Structures are given as structure tokens and as C-alpha cells.
Amino acid sequence: MKKQIYIGAESFEEIREGEYFYVDKTLLIKELFEKRGKVTLITRPRRFGKTLNMSMLKSFFDIRSDSRALFDGLAIAEHQSILEKHQNKYPVVSLTLKNIEEPTYGQSLNKLRSLISDIFQKNLYIYESGVLNERQMKDFYSFYDKAATEEELKDALVFLTSCLHAYHRKRAIVLLDEYDTPIDSSDRNGYYQKMVEFMRGFLGGVFKTNDCLEFGVLTGVQRISKEGLLSSFNNPVVCGVLNDEFATCFGFSEDEVKAACEMYEISDKYDEIKSWYDGYRFGGQDMYNPWSITMYLSTMELENYWVNTGSVQVLRDVFHKGDDRLRNDVAGLLTGSPVTMSIADQITYPIEYVSSDLFWTLLLHAGYLKPVCGAKGDIFEAEFVNMEVKDTFSRYAKSWLRERRLAVSESIREFVGCLLGGDADSVGRILREDILNNPSSFDLIKENSYHMFIYGMLLALSGSYTVHSNQESGKGRSDCLIKPADKGDTAVVVEFKHMKYETRDLKEEAASALEQISAKAYARNLKAEGYTRILKYGIAFHKKTCEVAMEIATLE
Image (cartoon, rainbow, N blue to C red):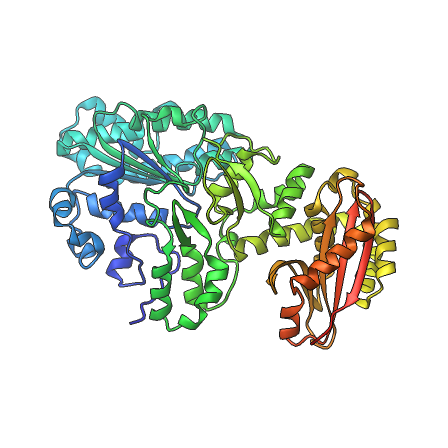
């Protein structure tokens, strides 16, 4: 039976009571008892169910609730010993920092004061019970009344756990969602040092040497450096995207997506959904983006749902702030060539837009990259996770290239016209005499650089045709396919070769590229799709010169 999809709902109680669409992640509770530490930090990309899971944990543990009906029929209900020992047995402090993204430090603190005030208001029964002494009552009311100073605010959570312990005579569970959002926002808005100093005290008090803490769970996107933040924790267990722990607890598994497709009677769309929203790999598990899947089930349209939900500043800045090598490596990612990286232990701010393990680790944790299938070891190859992410990076690459190429726009149009018209001599002449002399020599340092250079120009003029890079075709992947909307117009297959040293004739390299197109049948798919005129190009580069070979594909 189809269930109504409640877009944006992050309250476990609300979803269960309303009988809305829900993918069961309650075995997170069992796994926490098997694998947690005193403090456990779980990092996942945004919109991967972190807030909903924390809401679920609160419902399960909260001593002031009776959540038996909410968990009836879910996976955790099969583990009676856990329910009997732990369900609704602990005082819980639950707080999300996901909305602390203010432009100034003062505004961020005021927003946090309001969040703290809300928590103390929910626990006002302690204040009214008479278990607190006069000084404790004064401090309690100060937090409730939003009157705490900056220094006092650092002690809000540790103070609340002591109050809960005084009333319930039990240690508290502290759930802190999106702990790194204020840090990331402060870096973008210019008050990073102030915020990290505050957060070190705010988190350190409650999570380090706190006798009133049963255990703590934090979620976030990045693992902030020990010097920046983690030094305030008491040896946390950190479970990131490459760890096996909690691998299937965030995001949707393949079986869960297939079950959803069956529920909504769209099993025939599964392969299409997989190409757009699959690709995330947590530990050894392939996972789907839950936000995008849920949005697709609601709208039945393939769109960039996930990327468009958060800040895309880092995507823009890759092209506008990144150095040449970073842009070249992103060009490789766009055209199907992975980057080689190793995981940086922690993320440090401010972000430097250079090709480095630190930057690639940031993109990996943020959900833009994944290890190439089968990659193992400390050093591995990584690629864009799926079409949704790749399409978004392509749009920003396209915008950036348009800005850079305005001065040679007429040359570009002439180049594309000659390419589609089969005029190989003019294609080579325009490249050598005009276009290749526009970027710096350092821009063109490897095959991917030329590839992105040409690919970007084609994207900038796309309208009546589409451009595909590194797409499976025939017996491999072609560098570039150009498909007109009208099957009667000319389609093009391009293979690039880059000569680092002048050890071989460029004409021979261009001819070799042309032979590769034939040997690997790159034009086969175009023929199968009904294109009647197909041109094959081999283009070989060395620095700012090139040679072009071309022939018309036979249609047998």
C-alpha cells in the first residue's frame, strides 16, 4: 500500500503517528550498543537522515515518553532484551545545530541562546520540583530566560545533564545533531576562530569528564581537526563514510529503494533512478541519497534535488578560487578520470582550494566523491558519486568557462561549426592560431586539461545538441560524443591524445586516436540510436599546437 510522503519531516514521532512513508533505520539502536564509545561521532553528507535518526533515538531512550507504539513492528522490536533494558529509561538532551548559520558571531550566539532556552523550557519540571539548590535555580532560570553570558553559555549542556541527574538519579544521553554546521558557517562568514573557541568549551564541558553523562552521540558532515575541536572530546569513536560501522543506518540501501519502487509502482524506473541517485559508498555498502529518492517518489521527476538543498559555495569556488591544478583535476573528474587521494584525518579551516588530500577528503565527506569500486588501501582513486553531482559540477564548469571565453566567443562558434561540418583542417587551424593561445600553458598540462578545455567550449554553445563525456559506447568509453536533437543532423565522436614530450609525430597520434574510435566501436551506440551521419575525430595536442584527423563513420 502506498504511503503519503511527508517532505521535510524530521520528527520520528510525527512520521510514525501520521503513518507516513518511512524506511526503517531502528537497528541503529542495536548497533550503538554494540559499537559505540562514551562519545560517538558519525559523519555523513547532509540530507542523509541524520536529524531523523537522532529524533528516533530520542523517542526510544527518553524517560519521559512511552514510545512502545512508535516502534511496534519495526526492526528493533525484535530485540526484546534491548527494549526491556533501555527503552524510555534515560533522561535525554537533544539539540540540533543545523540552523546556526548566521552572518555574524553575535547573531549565531543569540540563535544558540534561543535553542538552549527552548531545551530548558522543556525541562522546566526540574526547576519546579525543588531538587535544585538556590544557585542552581538561578543558573537554570538564566538559561531559560536567554540571559546567559557567552562564557556561561559554554556550560549550558553540562549544567543541564547535572540537573537531569539530580532529578532522575540517572545519567543522561546527549544527542547533538549537525555539530559542525556553526564551524563551517563561521569559516564562510569570517569568524571561524571565535566560533571554534566557543564550541571547544561548549562541547568539551558535556562530552569530556562528565559524570552525569551516560553516553553521547554527535552527527555532522566533517571531522573537524583535533586542534580545532575534537581535542575537547574524551577520545570519541569516529565513524566516517569509509568505516563499516553504521554503514546502512544513513541513506537507503538498494533493497530499500527497490521496495520503495514496488510500493509506488515504478519498478520500471529503477535503472534510471540508480544512475542518478546511487553511488554513495559507506564502508563496504552501496547507498542511495535518501532526500533525492524521497523527492523523486513525490514528484516522479529526475532533478538535482540533493545538491540544491544546501550551500553550493564550495562548488562555485572550485572554479573561481581554485588553482590551475585543482581545476584540471576537476576537469578529469568531469570527463571520467578519477583523482588519486588518501584520507586526511581531520578537516582544518579555512578551506584552501588546491588539489590536496585535505580538499578531496572534504568533498568525500560532503557526499560529492566516492572511492572507485574495488578501491582499497590508504591511497585510492575517487570519482563523482552519480549523475546528480556530476551534472551540478558541469553547470558550474559551464558558467565559469563562459566567463573566461567571452573574448574568443566568435572563434569558439567557428570551431564548433567546423567540427560539425567535417572541416578538419579548419578545426586544427582555429585551435592552433586562436583558441589554444587563450589559456596559459600551465592550464594545458595533461590530457584532461585539453579535454575539459574543448568540452567546456562545447557546453558553452550547447543548445541544439548535447555533449557527453566518457560515456560508455561500443567496447569502452569515448572521450566526447556530440548528439544533435535531430537524428538527421551530424553526430560527432572525438578522441583526445596528449603528448607531454615531442617523442612522436602529432599526426601519428591523431591517426592513432582515430584508429581507437574504430577499434573500440565508439560510434556503435550513435548508429543504434538512428544517427545517419557520424564524424570521427582524433585530436592530438602538445602544449599549444595540435593535429586533427577526421573520417566519416560507415553505417554498416
